[in-house]
Amino acid sequence: MQLKLVRTLLSKKPGSASVAVGLISFMILALVYQLNFTQILPSDLMSASSKQVFQDQQYWRAFTTTFVHADYQHLMMNSAFFSILALLLHAYYGSFIFPVVSVIIGGVINLIVLKTYPAHVSLVGISGVVYFMAAFWLTLYVFTERRLSVMRRMMNSTALSLIFFFPQVIEPQVSYSAHAVGFALGVPGAMTYFAAMRHCIRSHEVWEVVSEEQVEILPDQEFSPEENT
Image (cartoon, rainbow, N blue to C red; front, side):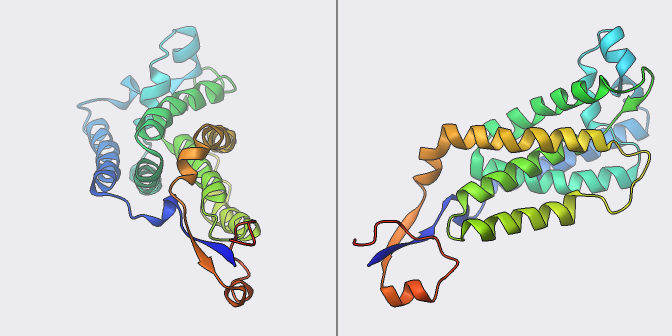
């Protein structure tokens, strides 16, 4: 007899609180955009350039510029992914990961990217955070969803990354460096989190005994190495 994994942390449905977090995240981005658009809160008060941040020492701009968007299309593209990932990260990995870590990392990403920009070029938008959150989620998916084989999990994660987060057309106004930095921070960030929280994540797993015949018809299932249980 062997053990089959039937439930993981990702088996549960997101709670109402996490759904609310996702909706509130979307509403915050929409509200800031509307305030910028109507000049109640002009975007130039929140946006960031290398000169403003490093020469004028207005470091807070590295965080506020995350919530500024160039136009409606820019807002909708970012906010759709942002709100979904906010819901997922909050539901499965807690409020420390989202919003706390994600918002802080947003500022870090902007500081890194602005260091490479000309003095008066502005960096706006939350896409760097979105790429961090996506990389964080997809990496933890590989470690967490052990109901599938390692190869299947890696294929799923890679496919989703290529479909949703890698551009087919290069647009000059898009900061691909922010995307790259966000994604690059998300992968090791997730690995570090998993190393620290491995026991907690694994504690949600539920295993059941299966027969040899069942093992043969479930080739993609990960089984316990304990063969005689």
